[in-house]
Length: 247
Image 1 (cartoon, helix red, strand yellow):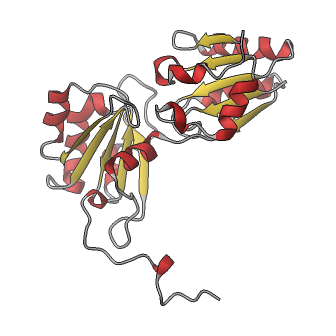
Image 2: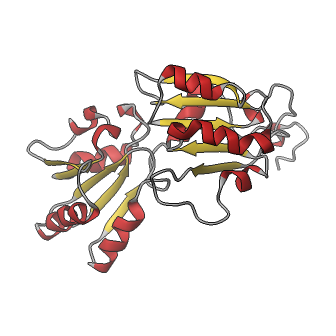
């Protein structure tokens, strides 16, 4: 049978894709990422489905659950928050399943940064202002960052930067980005994007850290840094230009 790695979206239960929902509705086993996956989604599992919260499980224990279901002839819905392609820890699970010859399929989801941009009402690629987005994080207690992927190096490009898993280190993030972006650079922090308890903070590199501390935001947040956040004077995109040849 098949393991389905499903992007559950950023938080709101109705932001899962139709394909993801259908896989969830027909899989008799569901592994889900604890508090990061909306509880309402689990109501879509088949009656009597085995539900496994992976929050306190090791990689070996998670893979054991996937393999046991496969050997029992049962499809598995493996729910991950956001989209499996970014900061999901899916790669090591797929590597293990490849070694064990267990088939799997990946169903994309709405990533947290997209939900954050929607909450802010901003496009992150604005003509003449910013056409590049860097998705990154900081190391803290997590896996160390590869050489050359520190914030100072990445920030030298001046590109719009989106940081996951970094709000607990907001002071260090600001310190590393200030030399490249300047204190007046717009910054937004979106916590729990798309959820009922969503929090949005807007400011600059000069004041965003204070706002984060005052709001008590420590996790489940995305930091967006870049001039696109305040851009108002920019050229229209060539996509819809009357000068563009359409034949």
